Length: 508
Figure 1: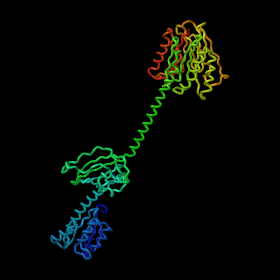
Figure 2: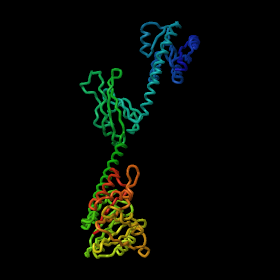
Figure 3: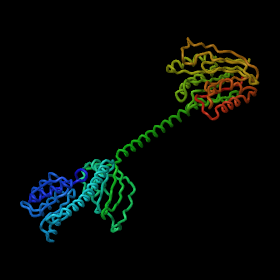
């Protein structure tokens, strides 16, 4: 319809006077007027101008009004264009023939313009309703065409009545090719015909649960999809609406995710198995008989599965007692591997009753030759001789060592004045152990920096003062447990950020 609801009217009459009168009257009402003097000309004007309404005379040369009406109705099959016959023929059979030809109303001549105006207003209201319906349909169609899911309507016979653009995209074929086909052509095995139990039942069945199906594209390629079906009654006609979503990409992503999870689990299982083997090998290397010496108390707390801190102890054939506390750079498996050569070499040299200096130099050279740059091992090495109550100690990179008397007081401190092992060659290595002696019931305390730097929830470190306070006024046989308990209270359930090792050695 034209602007502000006014109509474009095609007036057809072979009498030019009648046409002129109609033109003046229609323009006075505000309508746009198109004129034709016979049925054939009317068809041309209708095709080129697409009028909203036709006023059509019946008795005309070339082509009469009945034939023109039938052809106009055929040409306007996509929309309703009302036709009002204007004729001097007023018999009932003329009226019936006109309505059969496609006319929507009939007005006899001479024209009563008051009645004509009323009929035009009625037609105008109907056309406005038609226009509103068309616009609503266009909006719905635009929405339907722009959703990602295929929306397919199916008639009561189970045949596809319409399909949106997403259906064309998903299935790879135009809607006209699938219209009139059963939905099973697109989704094999699915049934959409109403069963006999629903015949005559106007109550729509609820929408089916969304389910996964295998759909087919035009080229025969199958793909994963989801389907939900719902039934409606439209103009007393049973219809089904199928909503189909292509989930092939999602299924592919899920498959890749499952494969990644499988590979990750396999990697985890292999790593866990290798880690368990490494733990057993490390335990075999670490847990030697010398660590069960009654004069030794120790504890190692790894920050991870493996500890870069190790403790070792053994007695030589001549009765010397040797103890080693070593701390490799870092923590975890790489740190633990770094100290394995130290263990093997330490136990081998103890069997030959070597001096502390010899052992330190041998360990240093071994690590310097085998360790990569930036990797080293801090260590404290002790040798005690019961005869004469004398011993030697070397501290390189680990915290200072302490000699406690029988009452838990610090009798002597052995500072860390040497480089860790594996940094420089032996000719650059300062290796002069410190000799010392002790009174009865004295104890040596060695520890790693992980113990002294253990931080509580307030950010405070354990430190040497807490260690000394824990040992003070304790008997030798309770001292190790007192220090261990003080550390536990300090951490209060927190985990230390580095490996922690502690050795308390009874001086014979």
